[in-house]
Each structure stands twice: as C-alpha cells, then as structure tokens.
Length: 157
Image 1 (tube, rainbow, N blue to C red):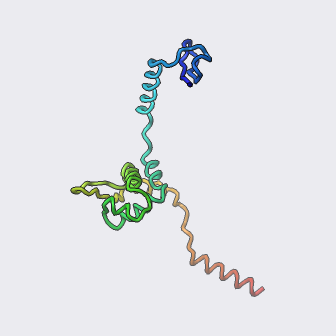
Image 2: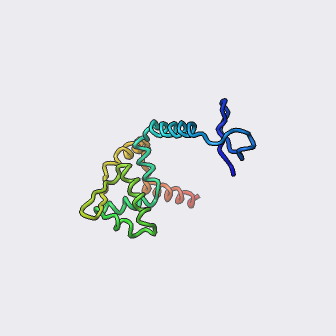
Image 3: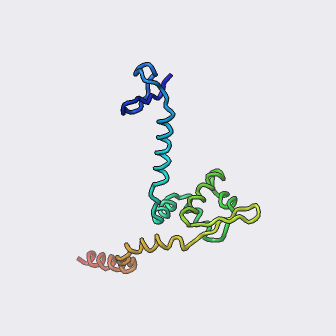
C-alpha cells in the first residue's frame, strides 16, 4: 500500500510505502491547509476579460451553429438539440457557455426552457475586430479587369 507522507521539518510531502522513509503517514492538519490554499487561489483568480469569454464561446463550431439557429427565432432547448448528434446534456453545456458569454439568454416558460439570441453581446467583439479593418477591402471586379488587361497585353507581345 502507498501512503502520502507529510514529514516534519520543512521537507515536501511525498508518496512512499510508509516504512521506506520512517515518517508517519497522513496529516489532517496539512490537508486542511492545502485545501484552504486551493480554495483561496480559486477565489482570488482574476476574472476573464469579456472579450476573451465571447471569443472562447465562438471558438466551438457547435456553439456557432446554435447561434446561427437562434438568428431565426427563439427556440426551446430541445429544439436546439434536435439537429445535433450529441446528448441534451452536452447541448445544455454549450448553451451555458453561450449564456455566460452573454451571447444568449435563457428563460423558463412553463416547463420549457427557451433560448434567445442577444446580438448586442457581439458588439464589443465587432468593435475590436473593426480596429483591424483599416485596410481597404479588395475589389474583386477591378482585380479581374486588371488581370484581363494584363493577359490581353501578354497575348499581343
């Protein structure tokens, strides 16, 4: 049997067979301190940037498909889940991620939970992306005319 040993004197806890290191196994005091430290680390973790949350939610193709479906109209959770080959629980998790990002809202009407798209939630992401739109869009028609003119000139020579 392997034990977790918590030696006195500042050395690190380690796994052993109990008799190998000659140190008593199991210290509830150390476990309590470790649990409190982990809990404190979770409580003081920085909150994610809303932009990160939105892009993280949009990173999954299933969630993007759900948003596309919700463009049409509000939908019941069961209707959202219907076209996907995954469990209702998996769809519920996807919906929770979208709701946490503020991209959808969920409302219970009677026994049915409805999902509604919140298009304003994408505004921050859109404004951020527009900062990169300083470049002129490519005019494909003009580019095609340019290529035709170049090819005609090459045929003449």
